[in-house]
Image 1 (cartoon, one colour):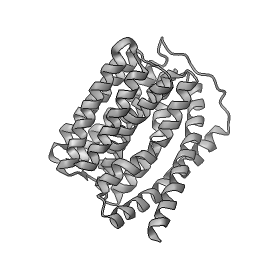
Image 2 (image 1 turned 180 degrees about the horizontal axis):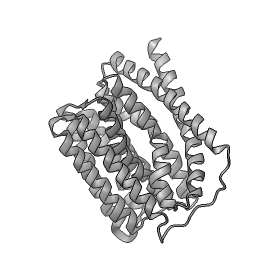
Image 3 (image 1 turned 90 degrees about the vertical axis):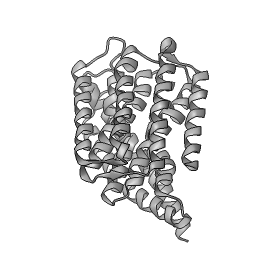
Amino acid sequence: MNHLLNVVIITVCIFGLWGGAVWVVESASRIARKLGLSELVIGLTIVAIATSAPEFAVTVSAALKGQSAISVGNVVGSNIFNLGVILGLVALFSTLKTTKALIYRDGIVLILTGVLLLIFFYDLKLEFYEGIVLFTALIIYITVLVKQKQDVDEDVPEGAFKLSDIPKLILGGIIIVTSAHFFVESSSELARLFGISEWLIGVTIVAAGTSAPELATSIVAVTKGKHGISAGNLIGSDIFNMLGVLGIASILRPLGIEQSDYISLIIMVITLLILMVFMRTGWKLTRGEGVLILLIGIARWAIAFMV
């Protein structure tokens, strides 16, 4: 009976995370437009932060409860899902155009952030002061993006700001945080009932659930020709996950992982390098490359079950 109840709770929470994030994304995007930001910058900042709200809520909630494996596993698993499964699926829908800014600015930040995590987690711990470094780096990155305002190769999107966007943003956030709380509780209970490690639960079920907003946002954006929002959302979300989510979580409570978990971090960084090469060739991500990325993402999940 407990099994069925937890499955029902997780299912309801996934819909809550998705629905709340859709509200947050829509309202945040219109608010960002008032600031005159481009599609790419909106994708890398407002939309990325909004769609990362589930990861943030789940990771911080788990960290405060001392469930470091779910905290770190959720971020690593979400990044696997974002830049493997989701980006691969997006490329299957349509060839995804990239820009120099996306590759040379944001791509480099993404890779350097991954390397920084490898250095910080070398002792299998993420300490308070390391969290400060990560969060400070995120603030600097966002500041640079906002100060640059509009990229020359991106248009400011349409969509009029409404006063109702403000309460919609707040309510969406409340739904996300509430759903995340029960999501962690039920996922942890399932892990104990089936004898599955919390790391594996975090890197698969929890990660897929919290990545639902990125999946919806990116596919809708690319089908509407909004390549900047689509690609920027995924890369920005991963940057925010690593710098912001893990940074804040470790500030609140130091995080620890197992040696086998560190392997997943190494694979993540290698995959980021491969992805940037794909996105640089021809300044686009083709359907063929999308298939390869999708296969890599699935393979990384398979490895998570074996290590």
